[in-house]
Length: 329
Ligand SMILES: NC(=O)C1=CN([C@@H]2O[C@H](COP(=O)(O)OP(=O)(O)OC[C@H]3O[C@@H](n4cnc5c(N)ncnc54)[C@H](O)[C@@H]3O)[C@@H](O)[C@H]2O)C=CC1
Ligand SMILES: O=C([O-])CC(=O)C(=O)O
Image 1 (cartoon, rainbow, N blue to C red):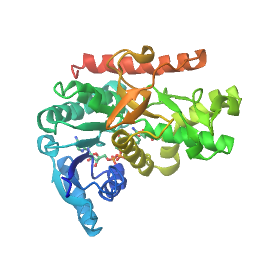
Image 2: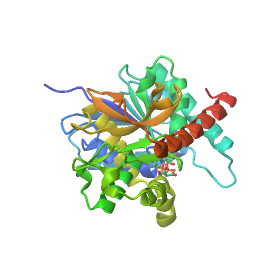
Image 3: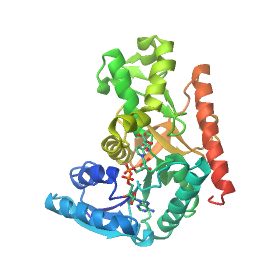
């Protein structure tokens, strides 16, 4: 039986992450080696020509699963029939820009995109927001799409999750695939909290294996939380290939499920679990099955973790209040 292609809309398609992302979507890494895709690339008018160049290269790969590429500069067309939307394009912070200016500039992108998703996307749309500030951009898009179930809007903390896995593996000499149940809580920002208290390394509690609270507080957490800045410092450009890889992982896990006995981290609208105010798009431990996710319940949160989760959630609440004041939600 021939499968109907899945429509995947990618915004910011001509950017750094877009260039690292599109070839992997087209080669089957996003949804699976047997799932045909059609790409819908959304750019601003100045980005269209570069997106056309990338589309030429995609054609030149002769990917068997790639059933079409269309390029748009109008979100209403870009999200038409979209089953999966990767919102990558965002307004970066430039010199002298205050946080409020950044939120306002991104509101000008994510509000109309949320409205376009509401009006034109397929009924089964799943949205991943990558563009920063990812959690609050996701909140703006979600609030602008009242007819789409809120849980379909997610923000990317999988890059943080993957960074934490490797830091922990390198510290303990374990292999990344032996590590399970690690969690990123809160915001995709320097306040995020990578939590190893429930993680397991080859079946043993990770915090007990590490047994070094000073390393946790002074090395592990800041290394993971500030990794984006460290990459910018070293590379002279922000994480692109690793961010694209994390976006692939996020959607692949959401659609195809978490592995047995493990969970992942996703920024999702809070249902009030773990004291995170309902509606904030915050990172939680989640399991995925059959294209849906559920927050892992019943974890004991110790004092060390509680203070850090609360601080990151407080930052999310402040960002929400700021965009509310700007009339964006
Ligand atoms: N959540 C996460 O873990 C991470 C998030 N990021 C964020 O991802 C975003 C993209 O990063 P890069 O690709 O490196 O940036 P980039 O600047 O190379 O590309 C962004 C692209 O978005 C396009 N764009 C801007 N406004 C748009 C709109 N309204 N509609 C469609 N396209 C639009 C631009 O023309 C540009 O081609 C940034 O906000 C970055 O901070 C980056 C790394 C990790
Ligand atoms: O700050 C940025 O643009 C990059 C980023 O989010 C990250 O690498 O985690």
